[in-house]
Amino acid sequence: MPLANELRDKISDKFFRGQLKNRPLAAVAAMAASEVGLVHFQKFIRDVFIEFNPAPFHLLIPTFRWRTIVTTNFDLIIERAYEKSRGSVQTIVKSWKDGDLFDNRMQETSDPVGFYKLHGCIDHYTDDSIPLILGQEQYASYITNRNRFYGRLRDLAHDNPIIFCGYNIADPHIQQFLFDMTDQSVKRPMYFYVDPALSEIEVRYWAGKHVTCIVAAFAEFHCGTR
Image (spheres, rainbow, N blue to C red):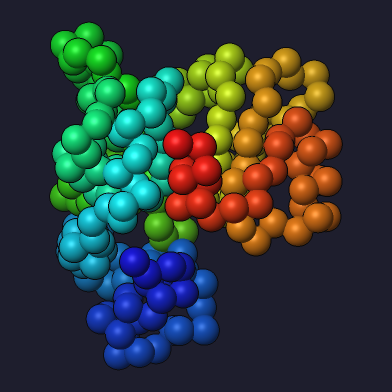
């Protein structure tokens, strides 16, 4: 699965004949959407990510009982993990925007777990009211049609531990959310940050913000806690 620079290069090759590879992903994505139209651009993003399936360690996720699962990824890895896992203890109920009847669908599902796709989903690439959060314009207006959506996450974060796993805390929205929640005046459970590349300096930094660091990869963390 392409990371940020690889995805930028794919966009550059597709829409700009290889130009702009020295620019940030958000800038290149914004220009591509402007050049060809948002839905056409998002179809390309869908085509890039649609082929990927869960790795073996992803299939362990459904065997745990979660309060909520949250992702900023557009892909269908988690959805497919729940479809393929033989040991699922819950049924995911996906939410991607305000007004998607999430609460009703939760009540209609046995053993539900809410699954929040904060930055959109390739299943809904044609809905231009909730664009994939990828280009600069989308980052600037990310809250549009997602206000209640983000509010739910903030409410849950006050009362439940959060595990940041398989995720580099670099997204500006998540950073702002995390720094709000690590204010010393906020009383909340311990959070956990799982990353194989964490340095001792970072571990000390996050410890001061009531976040325990676990130096491990996503796969190692799951295997170690099974």
